[in-house]
Image (cartoon, rainbow, N blue to C red; front, side):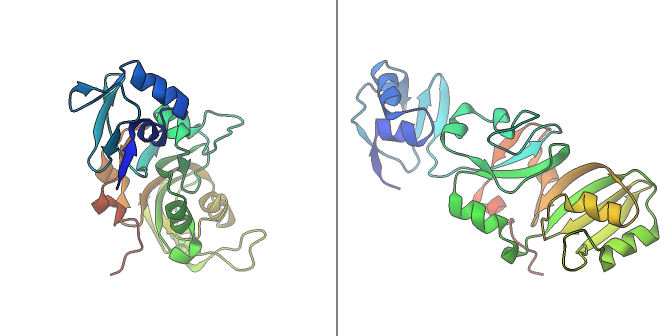
Length: 240
């Protein structure tokens, strides 16, 4: 952390252009520790900084790491074409900060979606070399059979893939529901694997990434939260 001028701090946190941030400060919209500040040149220590703007408290964050419980019919794109984008579920400041989804979920897939403005983190978390498992619950059109589970575990051949793809883990949860764990992250992978195994995906939810479970975040659909250092540490492959 370091000291920055107040206008640069507001700009870095997504409150608009530097000119606009200066106007906010000059207009008395910003306070620190209960005191209004109207000097945009004032240098402030960023570590532990909490400032108030538009009657809302904000903690300075060099980078943002969040988890969103994605609802259906939202696109993981900054330029959505047929449905609203997931960024519409977040504060407007996050768009200014260039927050992006880490990977993609189909518009009709729900569940855990990571988002950040930290480019190296996004790249590392998305890299297939990391072998980070992702857990899904899939509702199937036809009843689940032992043969279906065994096929997904042994591997199914997908069009345009050089070799069969297999689940790391798969088990039946209910008559028409399975839990499946993948690490490849291919396009429409769960849906295509189910189709190749002779069934059809009727609904899909991502319930965990690495060892971080959606259920532990207590998020309703459409809600999001900042990730703690401890939660970030769970976004890895299981070392056991």
